[in-house]
Image 1: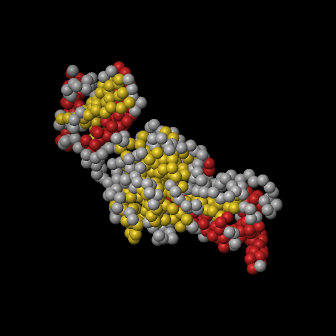
Image 2: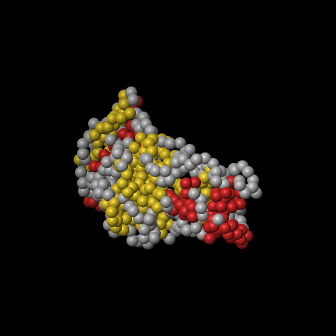
Image 3: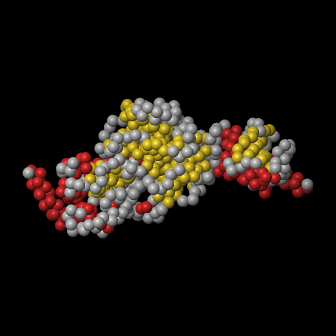
Length: 175
Length: 438
């Protein structure tokens, strides 16, 4: 009961935030998604973005990714809004699992960026768990700086690359 | 004859001051400015018609290896006064002194069937003595480059008193494709970029291969499972084995212990990255660091007693040294900026590292106590140093800026001189320089 009312408040917050900050991925979450992230359902997903139970809704309408400031793994206020939406979706659609993929921009050494990406992915996982998503449904991995989605060498691209992407999957988690 | 005498006379007059400087043929490699040793390599004698090509190729490769160090300068054959038509013939030292060749390398090649034998002599021209004794190496016709590298290693070693590095291989990541769809596969090459062979396909991201001390195996990080995991690859048969780690854990940044039986590496779990050691025979794991910060890029000292690694426990990436069994670590990097990917030198006296400062990347070296830091390179992105077997040269990754950015392999002397790209088709990153081959 408490959870439900809490969630309702969250949704309200989400709706408000979404209105004040629409389209925070510039070209929209779908545009930023591409096929670069993982082998999950984020690229080329069936279903409609207007169907709230579809992965496409998760990826595009809620947003499958959060962004980070340079060399940090702190979830930003904008990030919290998105993750609240992700948590709600995952709680409603209990058949899905997710792998959170952490990424870094190219300004850093390879090993450090792998570790930093892990920190970011884990921060997202912990946030989702704190919102009620069972930990057993969430795994984390890091690609460090290996999979940039934007290729220029300045902050406009770096900001998009410093991300953690929640990649949905139907299948049982294997590692 | 007249012309020759005249040339000799002029050369002697010109060479006066140089002659005065010429002691025994010896080059002590220091960090100061080095006047390169001049050398001449008349084309090696082909002792059978079938050996002609190999004789020419091997002599050129010896020149390329020696001149490529920046420590030696070739006297071109167009300046030669006399030719060496036979390996056994006495050397006309005045002819070589006249053109100021301090060292003369004479060789001969025999080919019978698939077997190739190369022999050589090294002369100290100004003292008129042979330096060391004649030596011969046997190999295959297809492996002629190794024979050339072996001759060059022997010459380098006799003149500098240090081990060579030409007959060695480098394992690296071969790269192709655009930045947002980069294909990476493990590859192995000779130190000079020749004889590239692929060890994996590009179906999964592979990172940071590391040679075992004797070069028989390679550790690397693979994303085959979607999670970074460490594989051990047998170079001879390309067989692979995964280092066992628990579900939910990421393992990366591995290196072999000096006996090749253990692996030190990073394990990430719950947002925390620490350094571990696993015995490859028993599978036993040992956790070496216990902090909530990022500890990664461990590298053992040559005697195996200590580990240098990077940590951001102070708030930014810095270098630390601890016992090989873990325990308290002392920070050794104190300059401006961030320090990562440290590698202990094979001589044990230096640590090479990647430094980031004011928007630039550098490869640098410092003594193991952190003193005498020197930056050797500077670019948009230099990283991942690897030592030559003799500890004189460092190979690393240089990545260029922007949407069309590509990675290449570069090498530089620890003096900061002789910076150059390793000639490769396509891109390359994460070199690991293996040992001198037996």
